[in-house]
Image 1 (spheres, rainbow, N blue to C red):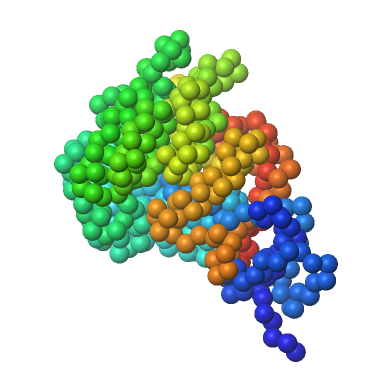
Image 2 (image 1 turned 120 degrees about the vertical axis):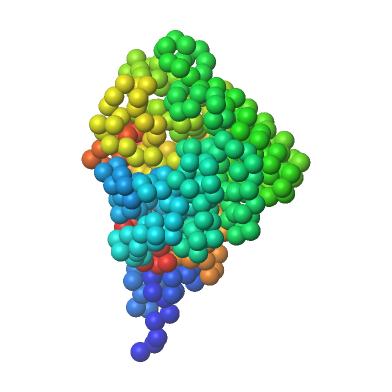
Length: 429
Ligand SMILES: [Zn+2]
């Protein structure tokens, strides 16, 4: 009997504009052929993909997993389930757990949970705290965190007020070759208001957060990156003022990368004024949703590369926490379940190109955080999912995999749904 050459063959998938058969051997892409009528599976497992589109597994560099400490919002198991069904092959999770991820023990606990519940992935890469307990007073033990498996450092949610300490954090992280991710918000200018300062906040009578609060910190960070000649990664950028600074910095050769999130591309502050969704805490997010002009600027910046890639800022909360007055509700949107369909919708509508989509979710984050990814070249990891581009689905609590049901998209109908997902040639959903 002839020896089996391939382990898995995806038959009749639509990939980059043509119908192909994708051959997988030992977890990597072995061959891609135009679909033939004559077909001999040679003993391989065959997955029929007729009518489905194939995409490389996406990478999310900004997820809040909530374990340890807040498992009622999300835990490693449920977060990775949402990632798997959402099309993500790898996620980086933020350090604002309880205890904070500032010791090897916490990093190892996260990784152990991931191994136990999802031995074949999605891959979990913890992000270490920049400072102990995220207090901004003393640096976290970075060497210990890198050895335990942290892939980056961030004080996300609690920007470091002390610029000299932040400088030292950048220097130490650079010693370990790990990116520093900064949540850009001037700590003295309206923290966590969850609404943009402007006409809408005035009319609603809510205390707003100015876009300047973000752009000021962006400016500080790029000046530091230039002075130190070190890389800085800016999280969830939301407004045009920040983009102007990033664009100039990149033109000067400063080593800055930036992400934005799907919600800044598809929603605006108008959501909070719409009679149907007025004062909805589901749209309370930090940084806040901005005016339409900023949304359009974000799309342009993603397309021209000022924004390097996308991240979800997946921030699940329990229903009772969001069902309170706007002022006291926590910030955040549960994003893993909807990120793919919402951003693929931008490609379908001709707002962004498919090339940009791939950079946004696959090659951009992989390059910045030095993670493997699938470009559908021979030898690439067989990390991909199949989705039905025509399937419509309504966003509702029952269909979301995340424990966090807090999304302003609840009730809306999205088009395009992940049907199955393979990592290293193994089916994970
Ligand atoms: Zn943040």
